[in-house]
Image 1 (cartoon, rainbow, N blue to C red):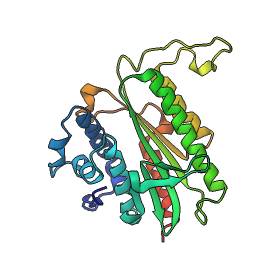
Image 2 (tube, one colour):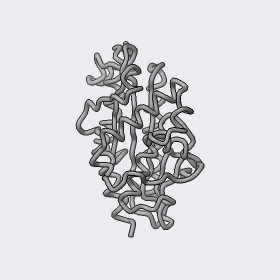
Image 3 (cartoon, rainbow, N blue to C red):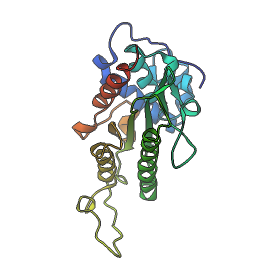
Length: 251
């Protein structure tokens, strides 16, 4: 990580202008995929370029930077918000995992967040995403319960998925049921439906404390257009819950 971001909101709350901020992060994602990221890094007028340049320029760094900005605006020291290698945390069933973002303040783990995306090859890749998400969250929760992070409070876990809205993702894949029928909610479900269901079920089963599910198509995405099809999985709800938890432990 090259450094920390500077808060350039000029007194306006990020929550007051959240749609614009999410649009910036969506633009950065598509610009990075389209090979236009370097042009945006040098632009002084784009939060997405500033954030991603500082964090390293990965596709989902626009969201990681936005989360850091929101937390910093609400009194969390930027040095307490770490990313990538610096967000490596021990587990219980495995020795460690590099999270996308973690909040570690005064020697206590307050939050861990993953920012994921999927724009193609939805078949097996979505199964891999589900296994990774369920496994990583279960591992961290077990580590907390076994006292690995003492004296930390129960950490806030978050999962954000940005998914391409296209013909392939709206395809209804066949189910392989050689022995038992799949869950009813997967019958006739598109890849988009399956991913939304993953986010919602992790939230309902308390594997995560917050989940966000964002859709964007390639054509509109470069202009920052996106959709949030599920009220429970909106980024604003995700970010407010994260902020409320973390600030409750930051003096």
